[in-house]
Image 1 (cartoon, rainbow, N blue to C red):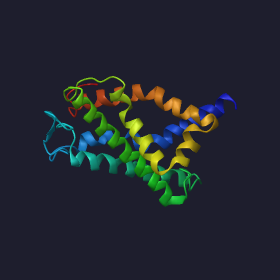
Image 2: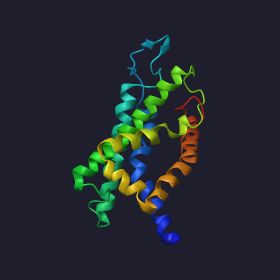
Image 3: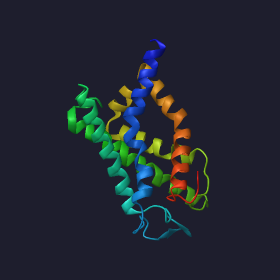
Image 4: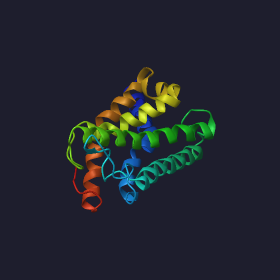
Length: 190
């Protein structure tokens, strides 16, 4: 495979992963009100903390799904009705829902781990902060659509798409957090 082919695979992987990249940022915008853990503690520490709300959970995930539907529409305009490659429209929506909810669940798991480690809300947790949603999105999607994950991110040269996502995610995560901080939506720029 030539260099251009690998670049196309990497950009295609990023396009496919976009519905997983939006939910955590959107959750910040939609967040507030009732906390997911209802203010409860476990072993003397909050379960998830004040940063995780039901409104943010569903608002974030549904934003990722909405973005995915827009991307399906864009792909259809260019003649690729089954761009996500999993059984037409409803199969594609299933993949997109798994990516979106998986990203939010990954972030929720990271909050749980951070509370267990005694880290306060907003305190830095390198690697965990940058990749929690990536791991969650891939795990949930692999649970329901393992063939899709294999075909688009593991098989042959498609591993380049996975590596590309892992490499650029740090920069994307950092940029999104700085923007959120400057907009007053986040208390810390990391």
